[in-house]
Amino acid sequence: MTDKSVRVTLIKSVYGQLASIRGSVRGLGLRRIGHSVVVADTPSNRGMMNAASHMLKVEPALGSGKV
Image (cartoon, rainbow, N blue to C red; front, side, top):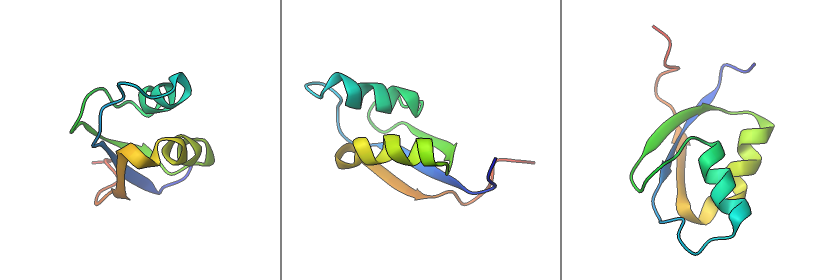
């Protein structure tokens, strides 16, 4: 696993999108507009982010989430 992580925020609705794009958004753990999650920066997560890039905001996570 990698130490890098990114914060992903859903900024547009998944309504009317292809099922594969909706699946990518769900796979990232996003549920509704404005919802943000911190995910590991892995190739599989990058692929899901690229598939739905027109409806996501991706930024580096400020903390790793570990205490």
